[in-house]
Image (cartoon, rainbow, N blue to C red; front, top):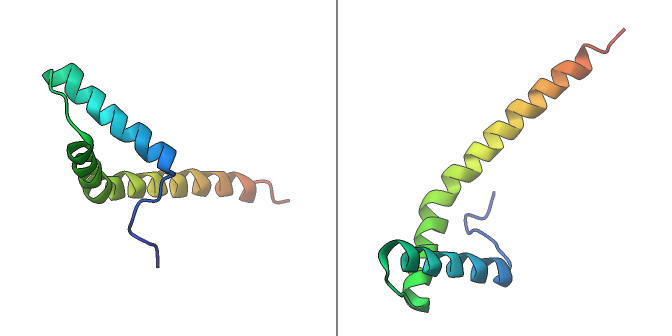
Amino acid sequence: MMNKRLKLTMENEKALKEMIRNFFEEQYDEEIGDLKSQLIFDFFAESLAPTFYNMGIKDTVAFLSDKMDDVYHLEL
C-alpha cells in the first residue's frame, strides 16, 4: 500500500514554502512566517496533491496503453 504522505527533499519543501511566502507577498502584500507557510503547505500536500498525483497516474496509464497498442501492431 502506498504511503499517503508526500515525500519531498528538505530543499524542495523549503523552496515550495518560499514560493508560498512570495505568493502572499506579491498577491496580498502580506508577509507570512514559517508557521503559516508550513500550514498552507501541509494543506495543499494533504488535500490537493493526491488529486494531482492520481491525474498523473491516469495520464501515464493512458499514454502507456497507447504505446502498448503501437507495440502490438508490430506483430507479424
